[in-house]
Image 1: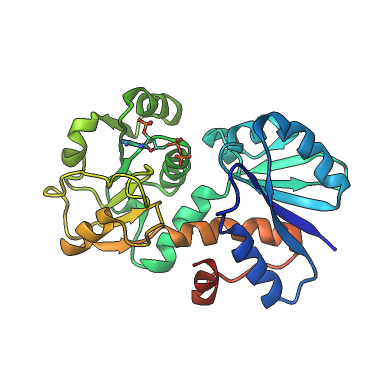
Image 2: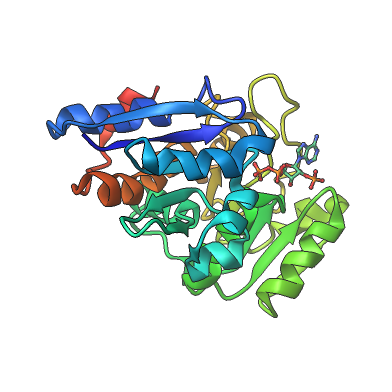
Amino acid sequence: IPLAGVIGMPIAHSRSPLIHGFWLRRYGIKGHYVPIPVMPEHLAEVLRALPRMGFVGVNVTIPHKEAALTLADIVTDRAALIGAANTLIFRPDGKIHADNTDGYGFIANLRQHAPDWQPQAGPAAVIGAGGAARAVVASLLDGGVPELRITNRTKIRSEQIRSEFGARVVVYDWAQAGNMLEGAATVVNATSMGMEGKQPLRVPLDALSSGALVTDLVYTPLTTPFLAEAQQRGCHVVDGLGMLLHQAAPGFERWFGQRPEVDDDTRKAAL
Ligand code: ATR
């Protein structure tokens, strides 16, 4: 019986076991997907032990995404570019293969919920420059966005992204976040602001065009204050839960041999 799971700390609130558990039941697959709490100092040891325990792979979440990349034997180009891994495959030859499917999940979610949206349509504006933002930036550039504007409270992180991802990236001051939205076709909150218990993201939306697609990586609550305000301005908004569902699909397929469908029932299972 193949075993998979998600390693992180804390891990009790992860939605991934709900999503994978739903797919295992839906497709009648005899397998298990479990949450595994791991302290950073134990990560290397745990990754060596899991394959011996029957695990075929794991998802990786906070705070292990960067360390998992350095512990892997084989790293995909996109995981290397992003600098983090979220999906590990334990190969029969003992090697650990690391990938990052967050950018894929981001794009697949937008394509599902905004079928007319195209990254090429115009400049994208990304708010935030952490690990999640790097996956979003990589996927938008890969999708052919003509210009990628980015702003972050800590400016050096945006500048680092510019130096790694190249000339289409334009860095804005945090105080200029509102101006960055002018003419943007795609707007993304990739900070953790707006999450339950945290401050909402406060960016003036006056420059935002009603034709823009606006999305948020935060999915607790599903409609963040930022999305609610964009919706009031007539923008097409897409919440962040679908990114979580879609990033899970490639791992499930690799571990359990069935490409899962991401549909409304999957979404309900994750809520
Ligand atoms: P993740 O992997 O979720 O991206 P992260 O790398 O810790 O996590 O990044 C969190 C993001 O939210 C960063 O862009 C962070 O800004 P800083 O780089 O300046 O820390 C942003 N963020 C979190 N709390 C914030 C706040 N109160 N104000 C502004 N930005 C905030």
